[in-house]
Amino acid sequence: MADRRLLDAAKEVLEASWVGSSTVPASGLYPHQWSWDSAFITIGRSWYDQGRAQAELEELFRGQWSDGRIPHIVFNPSVPDGAYFPGPSFWMSSQTPRAPRDVETSGIIQPPLHAAAALEIHDNAQDPREARAFLERVYARLVSWHAYLARHRDPDGIGLAAILHPWESGLDNSPAWDEALDDLVVRDDLLPAYERRDLVAAEAEDRPTDDAYRRFVHLAAAYREVGYDDERLCRSSPFVVAGPLLNSILIWSSLALARIARLVGDDPEPHLLGAARVRAGIQSTLWHPGDARYYSRNLRTDQFLRDPSILSFLPLLDPELPVEGRDAIVRDLSAPCFHPPETEEHYLIPSYDLTGELFDPRRYWRGPVWLNTDWLVWRGLLQHGQHRLADHVTDSMLSLAKRSGFREYFNPFTGEGHGSDGFAWSAALVIDVIERRARMSSGTWSPTQTA
Image 1: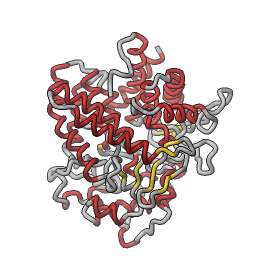
Image 2: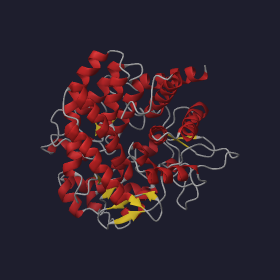
Image 3: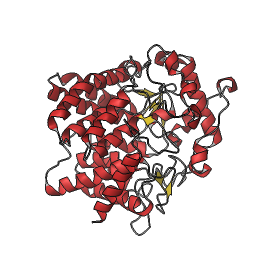
Image 4: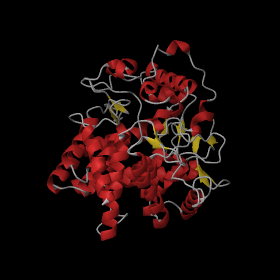
């Protein structure tokens, strides 16, 4: 009964956030469409509203560039430019030949969860025939998106897609990026006059510092100044990073794309080979044998970024992860740095090492629990048969939602919610957890059935 009430409340959040053809992450702070937010939202909606789940991704694909990139924001033209910064007048995508002409977007990307989300629509479909037609409509766009990452975001040919801005990582303000940003010289001439709209909608203690935000704006402006040319930026930017989150999701989505290829009558082999190439890159470049941990790597300095964060756990999304890596992740997830003793009040999984000097229980990505990274780790744990630990994670997710609602993120010790309220991906992923656990209990779903 409690799960049913939570399920209904989560659906109410998604319906309140629907704006005609897509879902806003949170109406006050995030009034447009975000890329990986839409993928998470699609997964939740797929359980009960196939039509809107399909529309969500197809609306996002309206913003896809001719080079295949899916930008991290597709702007809603009915929202005033000043309602969000950086908005359309900052990114100026319409001045770039590769960008679409009929919609304004940002120029950077987010993790490529979209093929996995599209496959979830098929697997949960109320109308299987329409789901097949949907896959046929979006397949070429997904192939182009993955091709962009392989062609334009692997400057050293190591099999890994690089991020060129912390906002592309999904974990925007993580301490994992601090070292790579240390040498960044902020050019005042690149910084427009701006108001931090995030501080209007959320408390300053929850958000990045002003100094961090200036660096983020500088990097975005520098990318715009080179015409969103990845090759030029990879040569000139101090921030060119390959990490385990984006690339593990790329493996997961490549395997989903292989399944989609079979469903639409295409050859799955290129997608399987793509997954294998990224897998090899993660093992050769991101695995630190001395620490027995996966880290991001600064490709400009060829150095590991060794801050201990939840990023290290995402290789679990690879069903063929080597046993050594799997066991190391499970050990870390069960250790006090990420999993305090059961006698203490705590919630899983903190986004940064609880014992680390830079840990902050409430500041954006520097310690709080986020339900989307919990969900990704949960799905990875299930793939590797770690059901007890997986149950700990989902029990924590549902407890947080019951205690504090569908917040953007949560204090890992008290469960207090921070950031936006009525946050769409938190609601969507609670729906997925409840529905999927029910399917698992009835024996109608196995973790190996999807990507």
